[in-house]
Image (cartoon, rainbow, N blue to C red; front, side, top):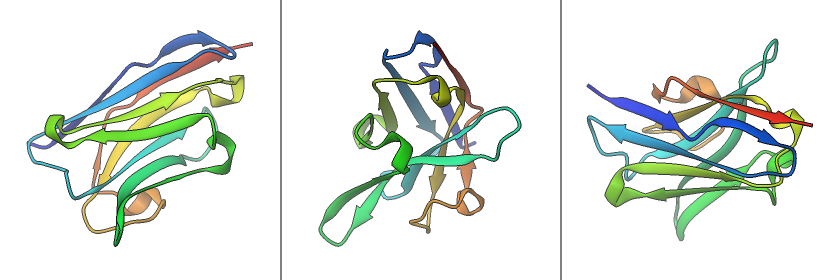
Length: 125
């Protein structure tokens, strides 16, 4: 059974940092595109960051609102993906989801094959 399990969420003050982890089990995702998404109450699920492969190596991309503050990384030996979040803002408050896409390299959540259960991130002002 394939599982993605997120951890590391919590309550933090504005300007603080959190590191989210997504541990995969049931299969290896070393060649898959991994993504982080978030969903705030009453809003659509939003792409945050993705990490995959291009012809010249590892490739990462981010939504504009987190560029320079968030960093996505992966440890294939541990089958784990991370999201380092710095300089957090109240508008970053949401449930954060990890997802894996086996044959897709974009940011549309409908094309991801596996999802975690989500972890809550709350940033107070």
